[in-house]
Structure formats: structure tokens, C-alpha cells
Image (cartoon, rainbow, N blue to C red; front, side):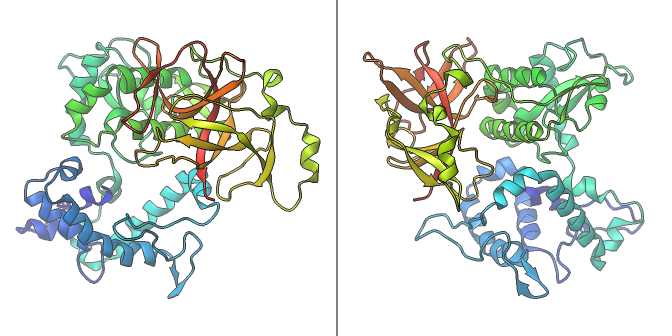
Length: 467
């Protein structure tokens, strides 16, 4: 996806007459053109005009397969070559996956957390070095000229395609600015502060990809004042409702020919961006020159009684003194009698507790909040990241002071059976336009459940733990 725009002819600034369009492709290899650029250019000439169209292309798998080896031998392995010597500080130079399984690398412990925490810095360094590399290739000098707009060409948003977004969002928003909720100037007059502009809700600088569900229409004045800031929580709630609930399907249907459409990915990017903001108490843009501090916010579910600190179950009531005997490595509580059902509610209790080593690479863990339990059943064994029967799960207690948004996340849900014993279920949570919440299984053989008042959000699923 990143290479797609790179494979288009560059608008030359030189006065040289270039008759061959292929000669207007920027070189990304000092020894000749990069194979990625050559192959994508062929696709574009064959009528495949966007990356989204390429994903539906008849020969998609064949093209990806031919480029995979190039990617492995090129950037994937060469990234960690320093003075000709392998320095595998990010990941081992080993591909995992047997037979026809997708080949993959595994990041070293702690690297994923560092990438999340220092995303802005990593992207800035990568973009800067990439641009410098392209500029220093002698074959590109004629195309670049003296006033190069290389960064906008390589890593900027597709402004031409954004024109198709404007009428759709104006209609969805009833002609109102997404942020201030006041009318936009929709007449064909000269541009004013009230003229509609398309904004990346999660700023393009933070996530430099055009996701269809990430667009909103706003006054030029509001858009320019917000700039690269994350919007306040009230704006985020409105964006979730507008783009990911009510108009999700409409946005996908209208913009799929032009942009990558994946509402779940847009939600995941949003969750990540706001979690990073919360961890650093960043300022969120509320309105013109007005900001609020990012802090964890509990989303109130109609079916959920969020656990107060004083009302937490035995999971949080363990005396801290128990942890003084734990030395060498951080230990987390493991509850063998709690079975988080991947199917239907199953009874369990927290009367029995053991201690296991905290998983590596899971980020900062708090033994008073994080714990381990087993999955039971098959309702979550589908999708890109299946949760299998018997998997060991890392979970995080949901408390009133640190709940965050649970929309689109996988959550452990608790309810009491007739005898008063706790029952636990693992499902993905989604809010419906009518205000109800549906609990979704990743295995399509299991029906969607509608949450009721007997259910309580209990813990947030973090990851499957190996072993």
C-alpha cells in the first residue's frame, strides 16, 4: 500500500522534455528501479487504479507471492545490517510458519511496546531517511529539480481522491461542520473560513494512511486550528457514532473504489492513538484554541455496572503483601477455576489462585489489575487473531477510574447464575444505532447476543499468552 503512490509518474520540476512516462518514475534503488515500483506500475497501466482495486484483482495472490521474496531479501533483512554485520535488535532473521501457513517474523520482547509508544518518532525518522535516500540517487536529480515536493508526493494524502469524499460527508453531516456543528459554506463562491474541508479525524501526521472511515467534513477554520492534534473525547464519540455505527456501510459502499475501507482498522487506530495520548496526558483539541487533558474515560454500557475499587471481586482484593514474596520476575495471578467461555456462559470462581510469570513483551503490567485465565469453547476461534479452546489469556480488570472505550474491543463479561455464582463470557462488543450493545463471536457459527442488564463488563482481553 505504501508503494502504490510511489509508483506513479512524478510531476517533474525540470524543463527537460520527458516523453516516456516510465522515465518519470522516481528510482528507489541506486542499482536500478526497485521491483516493487516496476510491478505496481505494470498493474496501474493494466487498469488497476487503486490499492483497494488491487486487493480485488484476479492475480492479487500471484503478484504478492512474487514480491514477498524481494521484501524479505531486501528491506526486511537489510534493515538490521550495520556495516555488513547482522544486528537483530528488532527481530531474529528467522521466518516462522510451516507448510502453507503465512510466513511471519516475531518481534523481540518489548519491541512492539516501543513501536507503539514511540510511533511518531519512528515514523519521522523513517520518512526523513527514506526521502534523503531518494534524493541522493543520481538518476532522480533531473526529475526532482530545485524545488522538490518529494515528501508530499511520497507520503502525502491523496488530495485528488479526497474530492469524492466531500459530497458524501456533507450529506451525512447535513451540511454542518463536524466539530462546531454550525453550517458550512456550500455555495460555489470564493473560499472562506466556513468552506468545507476534509479532515483526517486521526491526524494524518500520526497515521499517514487514507482510511475511508477516518474522514470528516469541517470548516476550514476549525480544520486549520485543530491541525495535528487529536480531537477531544466528545468529538471522538460523535465520530464513532457517525462513521463506525450509523453510516459505516454507506461510507464503505461509496468510497471503496478510492480508499481502503476497514471500519475495524479505523477503530483500532483510534484506540491506539487515544491510549498513547492518555499515557502521556496529552492535550486534546476541544474547539478553537481550546484543549482538554487526555485521561481514561469509562464508557457507560447500559448492561454494565463498572466495578468500583471498593467493590472489586477477589481478583483485586488480594492483599498486596502477597506480592512481597515474589522475587526475580513479576508474577501475575492465574485463576484455574475461572473459565472464560468462548461460546456460552460458563460458571467459575476465583477461590483458587496460583502465580505465573508475567508474559514478555506485553508492556507495563500491574499485578493488581492484570491476571491470567483460560479460554473455554470455540466461539472466538475465527478471524485474523483466533482465540482457541484452552488458550491462556492475559486480561485487565475494568475499573471505574480506568475503563477507556470498550467499543470494538474483546471483553470478558460476567453475570450471576441462579445460585449466585459467577459466569464468564468472552465476546467482541459493538454498539447498535438504537443504543443497545451486541456481543459478537469471531466464529460465524455462533449467533450474535444482545446484552441485557444482568451482564457486567468484567475484564478487557489483552492477548493470548504462549504456553
